[in-house]
Image (tube, rainbow, N blue to C red; front, side, top):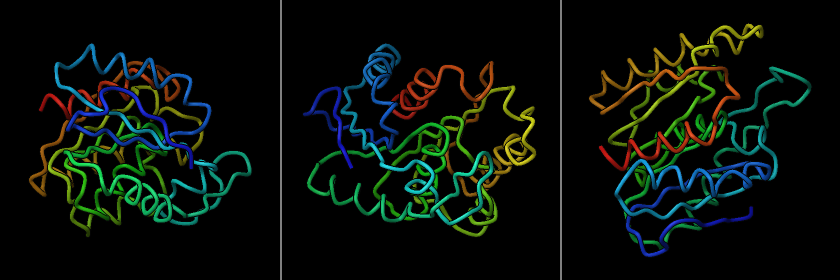
Length: 207
């Protein structure tokens, strides 16, 4: 799993983000956008997974679009990330976009190392996820959620449940006294991924 770093390597605010290899191109832009949205110093560490659907999914599940099934190896990915950052001192935040946003949320239920979660357009439609978080306590102090206003209008019936599921997610978190915000953005799932992720991390740093 390749590792990429941005920002100040001496900063005590550590942003951890799983990405796909094709996302590397926009990470520098995301880094600059975070800088524009906060005065806090930060270090952004991105981990490029080899297989998006396999490495970021909490459990095995059939394909929702195309023929790419979900491999359920998120725990393996999380273990790798935790091992990579174990000797770094600071306050850790985990975040990501789409399935990486779901991974970030799920990771905060699995470990207490992350103080906050930046879940931009997270794939909370993932089978069984809202059932899991309803009966499990998150270990992060604050969570940022966002969604595009056209995402619940997706033609795919599974993806179209994302609006209902993200409202449930926010409700569960609020009931657990987690500081949580849900921001609705203009556009579909593929609009402004770098800016949405930057806003998510900046909110954690500013709040």
